[in-house]
Image 1 (cartoon, rainbow, N blue to C red):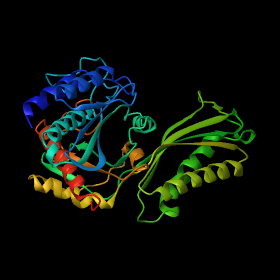
Image 2 (cartoon, rainbow, N blue to C red):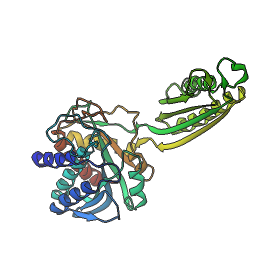
Image 3 (spheres, helix red, strand yellow):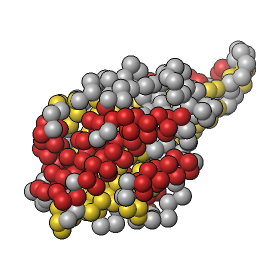
Image 4 (cartoon, rainbow, N blue to C red):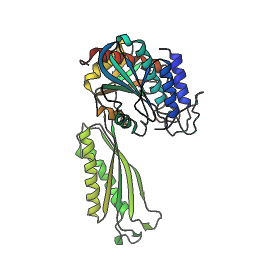
Length: 377
């Protein structure tokens, strides 16, 4: 794959980042580049995002490759010459890299059509950053007829040419909670005439931490974080209400469900014991990215067959809406080494563009091998 061309694509996308569900120019660019390469566009009526297909000369199943295309509301501080031209918007998570890599993979697959035992659908998905894009394209029918799906996220900690592979849970479920503790306000010097929601909410926060240590298995991976605690507005008044908010991350679906139930029970029980009330609200956000074991071997083989290094992927407690695809069909998600100096969502995020050809070659090879081995894969 022509690295210079991939770099040019990626830099053009990087200069023109767009927020979730507003990727209109990004969609136009990707569509134009796909058409220039003679790659078939499949119309699913998407407002943003584009879907393309490459069919082989041999009959076989339909599989999919996925890239996300949206950016973040971040002021860029990377210092690169091709910095964002859209004020306050930046590709700080590397979705420009993902889109360009899958565009490269599509072009490689077009050139290798005689090796394909089936069809590869390439999904350039909007709105991953708000965890709505995957669900949206699924509802538009983009997975209809698709037997399996494959994707990646860049990994700044891994060197270029290294691909992280692992079956099972790779990225955590993400849920949000809110809690209002309502007591009786009054004079700070006469607390016996009040029901102090700050004291009660503090007890609840401390008790939430016991869920991981006392209700879940020592082999579980769950985090409960209270990230907002607001109450009162002056020094000599006990307020009526305390407001809490936070997130729960887990790699086990059963633990995810149990944690929410225990949080509600603790909040309501502790509040009641003080004579207060607790209004606990749970907002499911993202399921676990759970890789199908059937594809681990071929994911490793694809890397090693073309001279790259496959390593055991280390799970990450961030979330990814690729998980929604995996609730519909089997899927496999890998880490792609990009040797970056900063982590995701950092205003100075950047990466090694040499990784573009690695990712493009890898996903073309992976698609060829999955189709050739189907259904053994």
